Structures are given as C-alpha cells and as structure tokens.
Amino acid sequence: MKNDETSIGRKPRFLCLHGFRTSGEILKNQVTAKWPPSLLQNIDLVFPDAPFPAFGKSDVRALYNPPYYEWFQFNQDFTEYSNLDKCFTYIEDYMVRLGPFDGLLGFSQGAILSAALPGLQAQGKALTKVPKIKCLIIVGGAKFKSRDLAQAYSSSMEIPSLHFLGETDLLKADGLELLEHFVDPVIIHHQEGHSIPRLLDAKGLEATLIFLDKIKKHVDRKTPPIIHTTIIVGYRTRYPRPASKDAAIMPSETNATVSAVPLPGQANGNASASKNTMDTVKNVLGKWRKKATGATKKAEVLAGDMYQHLKTGPSFADAAVGRITQGTKVLAEGGYEKIFRQTFETIPEEKLLKTYACYLSTSAGPIMGALFLSTVKLGFCSDNQLSYKLGEQTQSTYYKVAVPLHQLKAVNPSTSKNSTAEKFIEVISVDNHEFWFMGFVYYNSAVKNLQGALLQAHSLICTNLNGESFKEHKLRALGEL
Picture: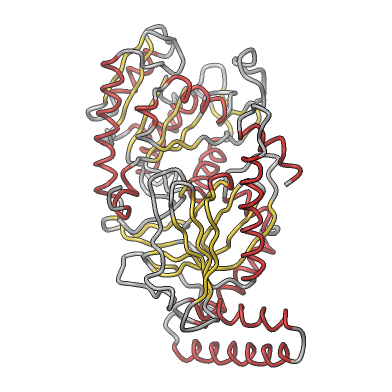
C-alpha cells in the first residue's frame, strides 16, 4: 500500500442525486448493476434520498419497490418550481454531516440539480457552508428554465464535467444546450434512452476512466493531506496509531485544528478566565474523587476515567467546557439516538446500543468526540468541526469514521506502561486498518461492549450455514442482536 496519508484524497467522493420519484437505493442499484468494477473501484459514491416523498405515481413502480422521493416540484412547462430552497438546504445539511464531497453525480431531476448547483454556489446562492464542488457527472441532464435561476448558468463552469447523452433520450436536446455552459466537457454518447448507460462500448468506458483519473489529480491538488472525514472500512485509508502507548498524543504542527468553544461571556484568548475555569474544574474533580473513594469502586473508576478523559485533550479547561457544551447539544437535539441517525447512514432495523465519550488518535492529535456502537456498525464523530486551509479559504468539516461490525477483526484494550490511568482501545478491521481510541469516560464498559459486538458479529458469520448471504443473515438477525 502507498502512503496512506496521501492516498486519502485519491479516490474522488461523489454525492449521487437520483431521478424524479425514485430513491437513492434505486439509483445505487442502477449504477452498480450497469457500471463495471473497473470503474466503480475508482470512485466513492453516496446515495441519499430526496427530501420529499413522491407526490404522485412513479414511472419506475413496475421495476422497483417504493418508497419513492422527489427533490422539488414543478409545473407542466417546467418553468415554476416549489420547495427548491428547502431542497438546497437539505443537500447542504447532508454534505455538512456526511461530507466532504468532491463532486456531484446526478441523473434526470438529480442531474438538473447537479448541473445548477456549482453556479449557484459560486454566486453564494446555495451550498455556502461546504467546500466548492470540484467535478460533475451528469446523466440525462438539462437546465432549469426559470429566469430566477438563470444566474446558475451566467458564467462558464471550468470544473471537470462528464456528460452522458442518450441517442433516444427525450432530454437529449436539453443536454446538448446544457453543454454550452461548461468549459471542455467530456461527452459520451450512448444508444440508450433516458437511463443510466451500461458502458458496453470500450471507447466510452475508456473515456470515463480517463476522466476519473483526471479528476483524481484535480482533487489531490486541492485536498489538504490532513483531512480525514467520513471513512468507511474497505476503502484504502488508515489512521495512525499513537506514537507510543506510553503517552497520549499531542497536536503536531498542522493546518488542521479542532475549533474550541469559549465560555459564555469569555473573549478568545482570555488566559485569566481560562485559568479560573481550569482551577474550578480541578477542584470539582478532586472533590468528586474524594467522595468516590469513600463510596463504591465503580464510582472511583468513573471519576478516574472522567479525569483522564479531560486530561487527554491539549487543554484541560477546554475539554471540560467542550464536554459540558456537547452534553447541552445532545439534549437540545433530542438525544444520541437522533444524532447518530443524522450523522451516519442507517437502515430502519438498525438500533443504537451504546455511546461513549472519548478521543480518536490522529496525526493531528487526539480528536474529542463520541463513539457510537449500533447493531450494524461502529462509528465515531468529532464533537466539533475540523478547520483547515483550502487555498486562501478556511473550510470546516466533521471528522467521522464508520466500520461495519462484520468487518471488525480485533478489539484490543491496552494500558500505558508508565501510567495505568492511560488506557487505549485498538480497533482493527479485516483489511488491517487500525483505529486507536483513548480517554474513555466509561473505559471498562466500552471494552466489554466492543468485544461483545466483535464476538457476536463473528458468531453470525460462523453459524451462517443456511446458504444465505451474510448481509441477508445479518438483516434477519438484527432484532436478536
């Protein structure tokens, strides 16, 4: 494997917007069934559902089961639109939570959106909270016909774009008109209609692979090496282990930082207020530990875990304030269950089992966040967004990791040789990706439940003797996990 720090940006990540009154799952099935592995292995694809349930019958109901969704509504002439603002906000929120994304892939109604969003983003009319869209793949696309959206096409788009045009597609003329607004677009003609093409033609497949290779280089130049965002095990990425098990990792020189949350009424850089806060927190923790000594062993362990949790971060006071702030946020947003489902892609049967406050070791230092254990996956999300420089601009994104339980290989607890209070949990995937977690508030519980999830996942694999796929078996057994 090549250097993992630099390989993270080598596989472009696309948000895929499905067609009118279909779904993310339907588009996923169409793409994965029709595009060859040689293409799919060079690109990461994420398939969300549109925000609105279908307002009428779906044209694909004879081929695909519901539910069906639509991105926005429109009149018969396609000149007036409803709920576009809500649609833009929905897409932006999705990109903030599960991004960053390098580009958009759109089909039909999703292609119309995808082709317009870069121009609207450049005008400050949409997607203002996420990094600039770097590339597009448009299948069966067209332009918005409303004068209110003409600004989306007011300037030629210089980002790399790939356009699929079907010879019998009713939108072919609209797709050709759309091409006029792109600089040097790559165009692939196919013999099908308004559908995802099969890429049976060798020249078409070759042109697509060349395009992907081009945007890989384009993305690499614009992606800072420190960005570690949504990671799904199975992709060629790796997180560094702590430099030594004998000490917690401290931040190194880097262009990525974790944004601090100041106290109410406290100006940034107020050293006096910070010192007072630290003294207060230490006093409270000291009293807590004294009480715990006279109470139960369990309470004493918890006090020690909490103290070590706050000590792991670069600033004891900031960690304490951050933990209080995060607790308030959890209550305000309806609890960890709701946050988990908003942060990660889940299936209806999936259940959240445990949540642990902890840190993830990274090359930028320990990142404070929450570790989520569900019946399907192990996920981590930072409490705050990471800020990083992208050219002259500063961008922010959450730091996230997701590992399916059936891809867990080992869960290894360990303790520092120099300090028994410093404890780690190493998580290894079946393809040998390593993740180091530390500073747990409930360390013993985390070890017990993570190892239990590993054993249960392996048990499902070993006892699956009915000839069904593991995925089918897992879904059938979800209610028993």
